Length: 161
Image 1 (spheres, rainbow, N blue to C red):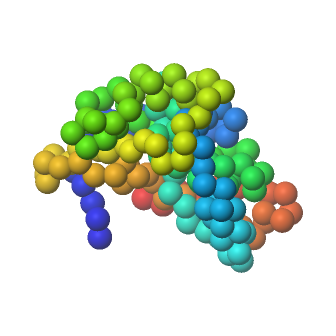
Image 2 (spheres, rainbow, N blue to C red):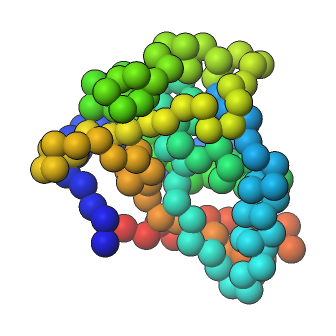
């Protein structure tokens, strides 16, 4: 099991958000998105998915572009999101701060431009290990009702803690 100790104030909320309000900043690998969408649809009753991590102010997608585009393709109107304080120094855009500056990532995210796939790397600082780890570790698990997807009912009905 993988866990980290992090400043709890970084999490600003866990909720369902209108998918059209989120701001991607990267293109995706189309094959990976298509595979994920097919994989989700292949489950008879439900599928557990990690929430999309986004900035609580700009709704910039920090982690989860393939999940975002797969869920959009499947017709989901609301998606699970973990909002974070993206301005915090405890969130980095690269090892030793050598990534693309956050202001530039936000600028691209709120524009019609997109970086190439996997151009950015977001990390969270773990106080216990005193090391940086992938920010997906801040995601919360959600349950997708796949049984009713074909009937037009696209729900996230359970938050798994």
